[in-house]
Every structure is written in structure tokens, then in C-alpha cells.
Length: 259
Image 1 (tube, rainbow, N blue to C red):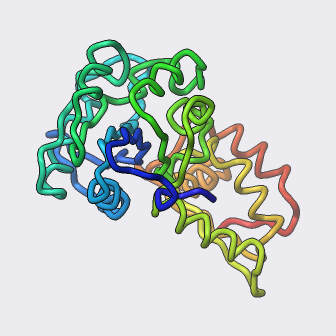
Image 2: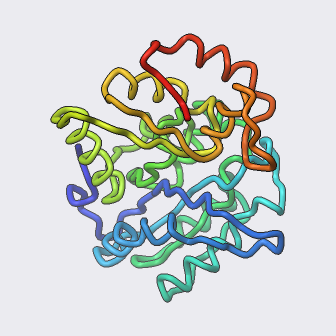
């Protein structure tokens, strides 16, 4: 795996995918910056080695159109406080104005793009959208482990147009997964969380073939419980996915169980 240690960074514009899909309260205040702090080691390394850094992320599900409720502006402010530096906020994630802003970045400066999901091309992994993103950097760095499973423009498509490298967070997570999957010690148990069942169906089946026990928690677990008639109150779940969740569950091996 090629990592940011393999890049001659001085003066390079680094277009970096981070996972800053952080939880916010009703007032738009970040209530947990864990995902942001996890990316700080990679960000600091890039800045310390003279990179001109352009960050991109998604936030929530704005349905492929601009929505102030899902703007990354509060995230840029919070990141500036964590880094103790000014983070320049772009008005969009593509377009001539954004390209001009990226071109004027100096070594050690940080720019945050607006939510990539404000454009339908992101989740469609549209080549045209990927090319527009690629104009903002000389190299692409992916440090968004939490989003790396999605074949979107900012995680996969852009790698067709720029040299691609892994950040420290992605490198660490991949190493840990390889260790668990390739050299497991029995009995083997995996714990899977998250909100969306449909994003994890393939992963669930894959894990069941490799582990002795799979614990499913969070919104995913709630959806399966609700599909089986269990009472979950107001807990997070995918109400529209209950029928599909039950069909999927009945297709799993007999050894699979949920409590």
C-alpha cells in the first residue's frame, strides 16, 4: 500500500478525502469530533512537509443538492481550532472559483471543500465529477476509512485521474483488518455497528464466513430486531428497510443469530 510517506510533498497540492461526517445537534454544533481528531496525524504530517492541503468530505444525506443544514462550514471552524490555524472554506467543491482558490494555496495552508454530496455525481461515481475534483490536486490521499467502502467519486473515482495514496488512519485500519482476516485466532468475534443496513449487507455476509460470532449493534442491529418483531421504541433504525432486512436475514446460514 502506498502511503503519504511515499510522496515528495513540498509544494504539492494534496487533495485528501477525510471522513468528517460528524454528529451535530439541532443548533448545528458538533457534539463529537472523534472522526476529525482521527485525521489530525495525517493532516499534520502533510502540512509539516510543505503540502498545500485541500480537504473533502461528505456530511449527512443532502439528496444531491445544496442544503445549509449539511454545510461543512462548522466543521471547517472546528478543524481550525483543532489545528490552531485558519482553514479556508470554499463555497463549493468543484468549479472555476474553487479551482482558483486551490491554485492560490501556499505550503502549509488548508482549504475545506463544501459537502461533496451537494452534487449527484458524487454518489453516482460520475467520471465527469471525478475529473472536476481531480483538478484541485496534484495527488490524491484517502484517509476516510469510514467511507472507503463506498464507490463514490471522492473515494474511488478520483483515483483514475490522480496518483493515489493512503493516509495514516486508512493504513492503520487496513493493517488491522488484514491481521484479523488473514491470521485469525479462534474463537473469532467481530462487532459491527453503523446506521445503514443496506450499506453493510455484503460485509455482514463476508464476516459471517470468516468469524465464529458476529455482533451487530447500533442502527443496523435495531433494524434487524424490528424486522423480527422486537420492540425497539424510538431507537435509530431503517423503517423503510424492514422487509428487505427480514428477507436478507432468512437467506443467511443457520448458524447466524441475533439477540
